Length: 285
Picture 1 (cartoon, helix red, strand yellow):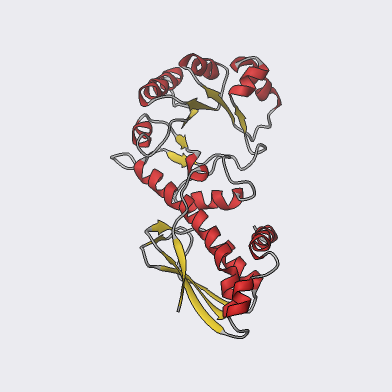
Picture 2 (cartoon, helix red, strand yellow):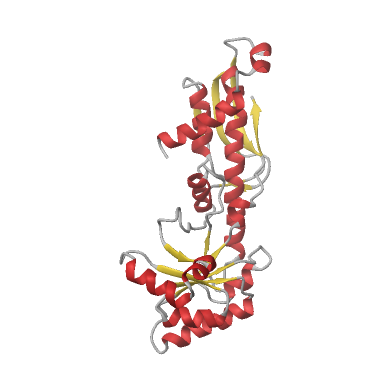
């Protein structure tokens, strides 16, 4: 993110430091040296090293930082991810912002890894686990990076990244056929056209009008299997050309059955909107 990352972290530091850290300034004499490590308090997949290191560096560029792990690494409880050494006051002033970024992003990466693991098929492989645009405002790039660190993949970063005709578009445009026709007439050849379908009849209509991908919304595993049979039969005896994404009703208890239906992708809003923060702490040495 470059300067954008520094701006984001600087904003978080302004929020936390306000007019200064009165506790640290009153209790820690100027010039006191310090050394500390950020450690995992529980097993997790690490993410957020860059904003954490930026927090320390923006508070005090003279701090010495050393990463002991990389984003995407699996950490055991007690494992150190980062050490910081220098002025004790500086370390303490950056501590909470650094931990907030690492906890939030490691939580996203850890939850993503659980979904990826749960969606693996018995013989190996399985659909891609995708995030959504249900991200924390201002943190989308970092949260989507955390999804990748957890082994997932990214859906659209913004509304300009792809054509996804959803239910409200269909209502406003007048139906699947009309919306697809308008999209195909105006879309650049580099963009796939995906349409959300809630019923198998809508699926058949989307296939008949040339959808590149279909988002099978809130369909149970049995309906998803039937949908995949319909798509396969539409293209038989040739190869299937329409990609299938399952969305809605996905959780860690259902994702395996959804994966077994044969879909190409499973999008999970919970990866970013409901991931619990991972527990990390800064230990003074």
